[in-house]
View 1 (cartoon, rainbow, N blue to C red):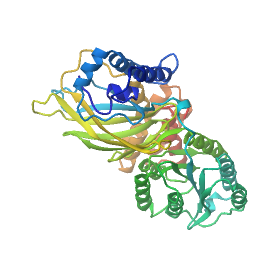
View 2: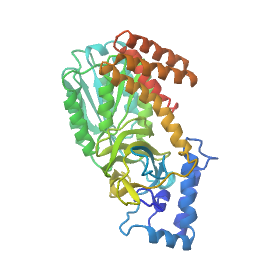
View 3: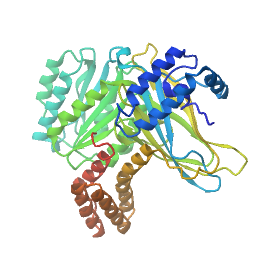
View 4: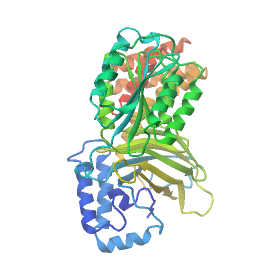
Length: 490
């Protein structure tokens, strides 16, 4: 039996190693309510429920539990109030196959019932608003209206700050409790546009305001709203996002229209454990800000980050967060994975490439390290646990198939990755290959019933074939359209 620190039977139920039988039964019932196929129709819930069932069957039986405990490492950590499960695409690494792809789905859920968790932690929120000339007219008006409604929904003990930027930044509201809203709303209503777009100016001023109240017991978050493309400061913005993530400040972004650089913005939020969304119509901003606030209000654990070391012959090729927010994760250590919600789970798909060792080893270490997170409602918010991902060496059983939820996730993500690969080929000057990938994507979209998106993709393929660049608007429709197919309700 392969046992690792991250996914052991105690972690699956979210209980400590010295948990009583009553504790184990209570944890199982809670997990069953969240994951049982009769209650949860989400992809993968059935397979995760079977993992929980397996853990309960062993730990609820004193004889089996004693034997299981004897197989555990002596220094194993208990889970920090999380239920942790992993699904692997392979039960083993075949020593005769050469280099192999291994998918791992990490699923983390709050181990406590919602009614057992204290009142939600205070929010420390910073809005960074683009007021450059391109935001003139209806766009700025919609942003102001959405920001005002957003702020009005905050609790009195929440901290809020507002920064505006064009080619310079202005702190419209220094970080302070949100109870003095009238003064802020008056300032918002007087905003005017001018100048160009320098995102670094806004991010630097916003980060300074956010850091005034940066604490593990708060949910610390910065929201960037822009419609423009910054020039010359991208590397500095990414460095800032990296520093913000290290301090526990996550960043999300809303891009309006077609002129902003989605690859840069995705990299920015990916380095800080956040997500980006695209809106064609600025009237949608209110709905997106409301959704963002709703998710921030439902955070159990935040700033989840994974410091890892890969095993010999192992590469981490790709990481993508499937829930609660869709988005790529920068694959360098540490991985900033985001937040664990009160309901549902934080799910991340990892793609490894593995070369079997040549020695007599019976098991291969995929990755190991430390998982860090902050649970704001705890008296001591910061928590950590060691983890290890491993697979035995051996031939796969005849007819073995990956878990269906993994197959579904990989299949839906493959559409998004097709357009990513086409963009890479196009940037490298391989227009024929880029156009071919786009046509393949269109075929898959048609078979999935996505006729409108397929038409946009085909038109983009024709442009690529003719040596044209990918149209800004079409590129965003394709990128965020295929991303949304992973979870249509996102």
